[in-house]
Length: 432
Image (tube, rainbow, N blue to C red; front, side):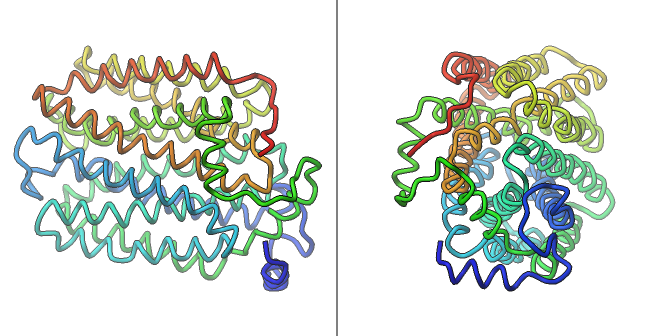
């Protein structure tokens, strides 16, 4: 990390920033920590606005034929590929150019999205929109999370991930329900246009005017780490380490990939499944919002809890809870039961989601943490693409939605079993 960059970033902090001197801890950096939570909330709103309206209205608004399941899944496949790639490089880019600069770039690439929603003549435009959405998510979410980890103490990783995911996925649930309601009043195009334009502009302005660069805090973590290694490692070396060579990181990365199958089926197929069962768009949105809000809120408990009792059991049982909840949905037929199952899946996601990311941080030296978390986020969000592709093919081939539910349930169980067998309870920090 160039010394001049660190010096300029340190000198460039405003007088009302989190601290006059660089100290770690959420309380010591509460103002900046809170501002990054606002960023996460806005990023959550940006992705949440697509969760219900686009799948449910694909046929009426964008001309998809009935039961065109593969085409419906295609926008999530593209989103997953783009976001995964950006996650991989975002950490390394931020270590070179700064967290704040990459955050701003993430909001800038999202600016065309509202206008594309408004004027999209074909489904291909929606696919292109998801490319920009994936870029935005990969850059902005990664930067807001890494910055909070920079500011916090090393012992607060579970709390940071729990609060981060609470805010982000509560926003996903809120945005899904809000845009479903707005779409019924003003139409899908106009509703998505106004909602997304306000959120994206607000995120960009706040990132530019209120966010402070946190690389100096990251350097302090590195300097304080007695296991820090002087030799620099390339992204390719770190990718190989996390993906193949290190058993613990492999277990976490595969679990991150597979758990996205759950979110992908909720995103793609639950809206059309519920509507096919005769309930309204608003009712469907309410059920799916329960999943997101419970997921988000429960992480306030499961994230800090993992700092005290360990992360492994929470991850394993979270994977299995999600698998059981997804498998149960096709076998029930009431809004009450579907709502309960959505909440149960949300609890499972809350058990596993923040603690997978926190565990990667546990096994990562501070100097490589952003890059190794980037590798994890690459594999995790590849799960969107792989899961959506497989489920889309299954549903298209069978012309039925039952197979994707079974696929996700079985995959979640097997992935949780790998974590149970391969992830040690005792944290042994990786030494590249």
